[in-house]
Length: 230
Image (cartoon, rainbow, N blue to C red; front, side):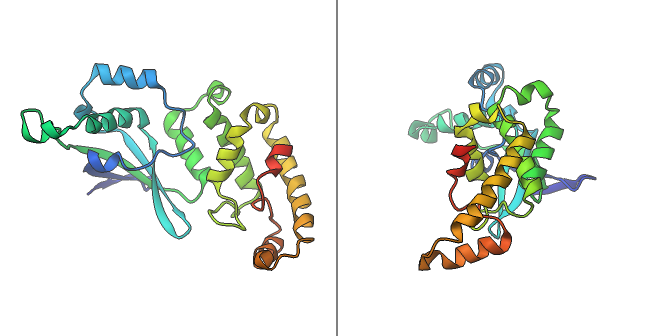
């Protein structure tokens, strides 16, 4: 249910907590801190955690998707609250009850916009970029999308930001040794190399994909092994 529209276009909504726990966490979020979750759980009841959640929406392959971008630690407590429900709860004196929560929902057009919004609402400090792998990777994702605008989509010939993020996570220690500018230079070099490579491929099943990649001058979605060499 829509309650209010803010000046930035975000919408305040009310929804059931049982529905909120099914919204996935945005992958660019900080790593979940179990100690923080434990402290919240010990200091308050789950049903009192009924506000402050923020959700982003953006289109993926023609489908509008929603992700929780702020409030993941509180949501973890709420999620555990529903998991404690047992058969006995249904029939005896302590039933687990659903409750209403308020969420702020905003539509963004890209992963870069999502990162900007995350940084804005969390007041991310420079030191945090050096500590949390997800925050580190966010800066490289932003640089990548700026260099290759419109190329970050789910299906090839485009490159899914989720796949890019997951692959960069595997190389986080090496990634930290590269500046964003140097990373983009390497992406340019690898893209040129990949374009030349796919031009030599003669497989009927890949013919349309190769043609489209050449048209876009973008072939980094062909095989993410290029990240290994960087």
